[in-house]
Length: 143
Image 1 (cartoon, rainbow, N blue to C red):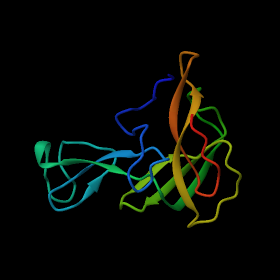
Image 2 (cartoon, one colour; image 1 turned 180 degrees about the horizontal axis):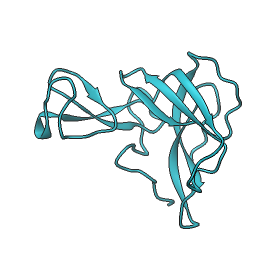
Image 3 (cartoon, rainbow, N blue to C red; image 1 turned 30 degrees about the vertical axis):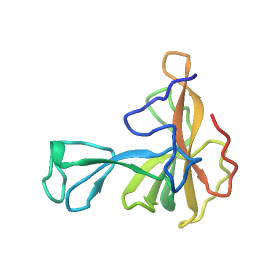
Image 4 (cartoon, rainbow, N blue to C red; image 1 turned 135 degrees about the horizontal axis):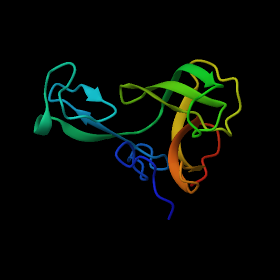
């Protein structure tokens, strides 16, 4: 099995609400504020930290908030051009991620996006599976 690039940020399995799309790992404060990426140093709203924060899984489904294509980048991965999306998740937080290279552009603000895992090259010349966003209507092959 090809490893996940960032298993601390997402899971291969989905949630009950969206079982076919990888879930995002987050933390939730006692007051209900959700933080992604997960960090235990202190909630930016309540100050809860450590064991006061509950691990939660987010569906990875949301609406496109912003989009930008990167044409020049100092690192070899991801290969340019690549597209960064900002997605307002149904579960609450606004997150940034990469759009699948197979996703047709342009995308309109408000388009429904979901997560999927794709096999991509890593810095050592091998491959890993990494999280990407695609339109909810696009096919979501397992990777």
